[in-house]
Amino acid sequence: MQIFDLAIAWCWKYDADFIFQIDKECGKRGLFSYLVHPHNLFETMHKIDSGELGFKVFFDRASDQEEEFDGLVDLMKACQVRMINDVDKALWASDKATMHLEFLTHGINVPYTIILPPYEENPDLNSIPLEKVGKPFVIKPACGGCGDGVVLDAQSIKDIQIARQEYENDKYLVQEKIFPVQIGKKRAWFRVFYVCGEVLPCWWDDQTRIADVLSPSQIDEKIYLGIEEIIRKIASISKLDLFSTEIALIPPEKLLVIDHANDQVDLRKKSSHFDGIPDEVVDRIVTGLVDYVQRYVARTSIRTEFSRCKKI
Image 1 (cartoon, one colour):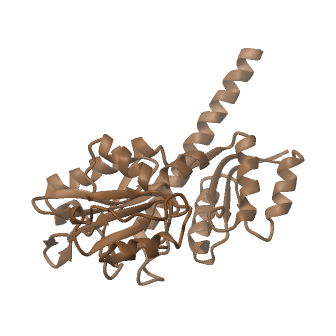
Image 2 (cartoon, one colour):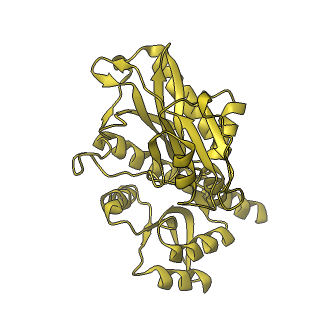
């Protein structure tokens, strides 16, 4: 059997630079990586199933986009391969309604939100207390991603009913619209990345979708540390290894989590895409992921050697 340290499943063309950077970093450190793309997916699955191939760590960047990769995820799970973002934990954390309630329970500030059942279960909702969310308000599906199904300037129950029919099997969140304070010339809206224990905060303008590195010297230390504390709480709740979250600062110096725990993070670099992530942040995410793989491989090797010694 050939055993590789890391398998990466990917299919999105804009992921190529990120994936190849991880592959290159693994090679520099003497780690063996294996890339699974649609062109070698079924061959790879056959080799795993027949015992020809084995992996220590699996990073899935494909199954959320192409169902054909679900079988690969199932195989990795059956073989007890360590997953970066365990599939069951990621599925649980992807539900914004569930995360909203978890955040409230753990003392994380979130916008005032009304959670509605799926349209298919309860199509007639005429008594929603909209006065509590104000106008305009935001509508978003609980399990949507990449802004799909989100309405940013809703005004009425009619808007809610129309939105709920787009994903009629999903719960919906009706949420107050947040207007952040200004810090200098920037809107105090942050997109924060978590990778295997490290917190990487960025400025992120929710209107232009432009991101910049956030350094501790640019904002009050209390706010910066507050952002870090929130992200570490979310990591503890979600049990995810890699995710991003959006946080806004509103008066008087109150941090609100606007978006929850996005496990399929868009990691296009800003040097290639105007709305991408700062290059140095993506570089640190790559380093953090490969650091994690290296530590895991070292630990498993030590355990294997220890077991061998005990048997002798």
